Structure formats: C-alpha cells, structure tokens
Length: 512
Image (cartoon, rainbow, N blue to C red; front, side, top):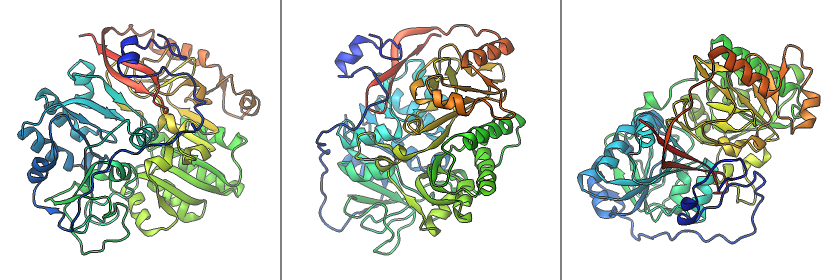
C-alpha cells in the first residue's frame, strides 16, 4: 500500500512485522501506560570481570539482542573487541541494536553478518563497507532505521528489548558508577548510552580507568550496572575528537551559512529567549559564528542550545549569549571539556531529548533548527540515508526529531560535484516535507508554500533571492543534467521508521 507521502510499503512487511504506514507528522502525545522491559537484577558487590571473553561467555547466548553506544565515534575500540569475542565463541542469530554505527565498526559488522553471528540490525544509520554490503543484500533481514528519539521510545515501550548492553566508559568504580567526562577517552555526554543503562536486562561497563568508590558525578549508576570489565583501552582519544571543529573556508558553504543566518535573523523567531539546534558540518558551524555576531549586534540572547554540541556552541555559552546547553552528545574535545567544567551544560538522555511519546521532549521547545540533506525534493521531503547510487550511506540521527522546530531550515548545496541535491523525488524519504520550512542553497532559498507566514516575512531579505523549489530543482538539473534512474531488486533491505514507529519508506536492494 502507499502511505501518506506516496511511498509503496510492501503489504507483507506491514502484516508480518505489525507495522502501520506513515500518516502524519502530527503524532501528538498518546495517552497510554508504558510497560518497561524486564530488568534482571544482579545482587552483590563483586562486579569486576577480568576479560571481555569471560563476560561474553557468561551473558551472551544465541538469538539475543545486544547494544552499544556511539559516543566514542571513530575512536571506539570496545565494539570491535566485544564483537570479535562473540564471533570466536560461535554465537549466532543476534540482533545488533546500537545507538548508531560508525565507520570504525563497519568491517567487523560485515564479518559478523557473514559468520551468521548477526542476522538483524536496528540502528540510527550506517555507512561505508557495511552500508554497501547491506544495500546489496548481505543481511538476512531488513535493517530497521530509527531516529534517536524513536529509538528511545522503542526501548522505553519494549519494542527494542536489549538483553545485554556493552557500554564503553572512560571511567568507572568497581560497582559501576561512571561518567563520560574523566579519563583519557573522555567524550562528554553519555546521552544515548543512558537509555541502554536504564532498560537493558544486563548492563556491562567496559573501562580502562577503574577509580575509587564512590565515583561522582555518576551519569550511569551502580544501581543499573551488573558487571564492570577492565580493558586495556576503551578508545583512541585523538579519533574521538580534539579541539574545536574547523571553521569552513569553502566559499559555497560560507555563502549558504550567510543566507541561513539571514533567514534566521529575519524570521519572527529571532528574539530574546529563542532556542536553536545546529549540526556539526562545516556550513552549520559557520552559521553558529554568523549567528553569534547577529546576537551581539541585536543584543539578543538564546534560552538554550540543543543536540550534538560543538566548541562554537560552547563559546556562546561562555560569552553569555546562550543561557543553557542541553547536551545529548559532544562532537569535539572542547564541548566534552565544557560539560565537565560548566554547570550550565546539562547532560540529557535521548528520551529527554526527543522521545515523541514523552510528556514533553526538548525538541518540542525548539524555535530554530538547521539540518543538512543528501537530497531534498520538490515536495520538501528529505533524504539523509541513501546516496545518489541508492547505497545506504547516512543516518537519521536526530533529523526527524529536530525537524519539529518552529522554523526548520535545510542547508544544502544545489549540487555536489556532478550529483544533484534538489530533485523531483528523493530516493528515500526520511523526514517528510511537512516538517521542512525553508531550503537554503548557495543560489537562493525556497520556502515551503504551506508556510504562508514565512512567505510573507522572508521573501524580501536583501541579498537573498527567493525561488520556488521547482525552480531550484530545474537549476540543479541544468547544471548536471538528468541523472539515470536507479535500479533495484524486489528485496527490501531496510525499513525507515518515522518518530512514532510508523513506516515512512523502505530501501530496496541495489541491482548489480
């Protein structure tokens, strides 16, 4: 059947996996009683285990669901060490349920799929060799992609039942009090891992830094932890992030950032006490710099900044231009250090951040958000999952979640090299067009015609040309021509959930 954004969802998936098709972004706040997953309790104070092999032998069995977090990013060493031990023990038919998958994990996951160790995956995204392998049909069952808020919802409601959570931390005492702020592999907020620590049947912390009891402040608490494993190294701090993310010098990105800043400052939401979220890419970081100057010039301060945090956002906090930072993840060392030293930088879990079934989530309070796109189409639908070749090479992350802001801006170039960004129809719908308000490119902006108020307020900004999105699509096509239609098989390799768990799209196997 076709869902409300016109995507064909296979009837067998709707029936066999008990899905409903996507209907609307207005999902509301359902009045229902949550039943949390069963948490198995381990009594006693002797929680320290001497090796990864020992804890895997003790806890992991065929058919289980295991989870990891991705705060260590490309510096992560825990994932590969644990997965290798699982493969060596011949364990089969696991569901892998991490908060996301980074490039450093890719080859190990491919290895685990080929050995029959992993037969199911649910994640925020994947790239590289893993994305390519899954896109060509390697995994037995379709991957389920969920946003960060949707993953939190699914865990809290028991849709994702984690049997064992393996959580790498830069410090812990012997009974499991830990945080992400101290140690050689410090990375700041543990926002995504906090969900696993609270709801997994068994919680295993892995650390290279055992500290005296009681270890405070404790983000993960001894009341949640079953075992602590001392390892040689949690991760490479140089690959986790060092210093401030570099300010882009690319003329195209700078031009986009300037226009994004103009859109924000000419909108009705740029006023004292506004709130915002930006990303970690070059253009998004440039927006933060331009926004800082506009705030100084207009004597405007923000109530809070949200999301994955970078050094430029921390600088706003230290200058007094932002009152609070609500931090679910840190993208560089500057942001991680700030969370340790500044009480106004609050660690939040993924549920507090963006669970749509909460009594309230931080994203519900957002005024302005700047997001990126691999593709955006003439109905303002956004693809951040599949590339121009149809291969999985991205992540939902918080894209759907943050797009609920009062002003949602997509910043993207008209074309990337010879690849069109603005297209008639995106390859994969991740965030529906009803969530998107303005597209900003280097040549000008397009305003969603459903936002009549913004058409009036943003159509006469000096130096910011306004086009229809159809006109931008034609401009892009004139530059690089009409791309060849992609070819897929009938096999579904991935399911794209919306925030409420409905199916907004599916990804088909790429035809060789």
